[in-house]
Amino acid sequence: MPRATLLKPKPPEASHTMKIIAAHEHHTDVAGQKLIELPNDTNPFELDLAGVDRIDLQFPKFTDGRAFSQARLLRGRLKFAGELRATGDVLIDQLVQMARCGFDVAVLREGVDMADAQRQFDRFKAFYQGDVTHPLPHFREAA
Image (cartoon, rainbow, N blue to C red; front, side, top):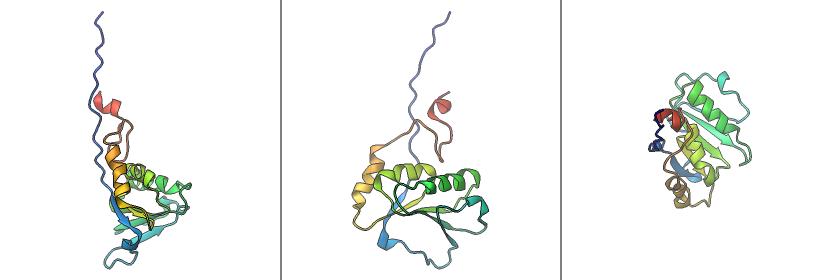
């Protein structure tokens, strides 16, 4: 009986990049852009996304993660291709997961060090699980 060979394929590279901005750089009155500020208790399936350039998803407090679900639904099921922006109580230890759920931009609270935030992405170069940019888990891509 032939012996099975186990290969250790290289994990997929993290490809979704996220722009990090300070709170004072965040504006909701951008000329020429159709913008939706979406409370985290709103069902994304009830939105008219026609012509929408940006959706601001709100984290009213760090323990409330409904905006993660909204981002995942907007990207995965509704195929929203515009900008998703995380606003509110955004913690730097949540940034990597935000990017993996489909956020493009995170607005940091006043007093948060931008370099500390960027270091979160430098720590994690690849992931085993699937995400918005790589839906298949690593073991499925390697097969």
